[in-house]
Length: 360
Ligand code: F6P
Image 1 (cartoon, protein in one colour):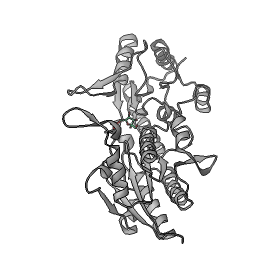
Image 2 (tube, helix red, strand yellow):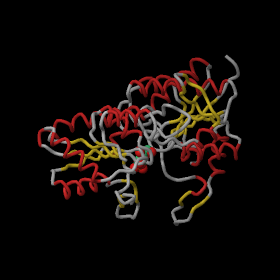
Image 3 (cartoon, helix red, strand yellow):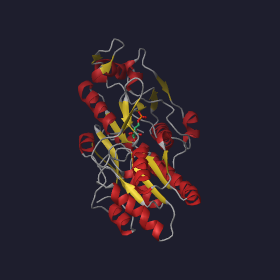
Image 4 (cartoon, protein in one colour):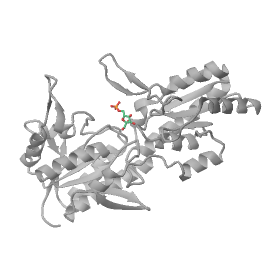
């Protein structure tokens, strides 16, 4: 069984479906296969910054029912870079040493960090600075980490966006409307193109490919001429206006995030072709609820592989899914390879081959 270990696990960045399935797999493999102890750290690095550090021992019974549970039982945060942590007086403070001290205070032999590229970059910096034995697991509905074909959460988000298109299809046809579905994905159009093809969209707009309003309107008219009185459009949140402006929503506190490109397109379509147009913003529904079977499978395989890396003493690595296998790469390689939709790739060719308007 080898030497006894105490390992920590945390989820960092935005949540997504499948996180609990990874935690379950890590606990099963660490406890049953190796006889180790697993500590679940609360609220990402905030749990290590707190005094005493916020962590609890995870037993098989606690995690066994988690396979289908959405969210993360450990909590998470996508705010508060520990190297420039926002303090109550408005200043920014480097609190990295407190997190490193928290790791050592818990007497951890290794840490499994589940996160997107931003979280993994921060965790790696902490690991290098403080002698933390880190293994990374990729998760993000945006699927923009280049070295892995799957990141946990993406498949579920695509399923949810596809189901939304399926539902919009009927109401669009009933009312002879243009229906626009705005989806997440940050700067990558992976969710939009995958769900758009799977859900039979007529127009797919992604940040990687420029478009014109004229061509969208042409597509709507072309469909009308062939007796199709409705049109389904899916658009990624980071698509810009036709003259290149980023569309964001700002709350009353002055905080901005992507949002509003669907409404912008609707106004343009109504003005130019006069067809009734409605917008659905899918938002955080894409991150919630039960994970798809594929996400559960990937999460389970990644959890087991991460524990096995620790058993082999291989740190500073992230597990990946490549050519039907789970492998691992240095975390630096993972965070250096951003993956946007390839404008010459299979999905773009597929969409174009189906006559979907995808930009010019
Ligand atoms: O990175 C995941 C993601 O869901 C993006 O697709 C989206 O732009 C962002 O997070 C939303 O973040 P928040 O949960 O802070 O609104």
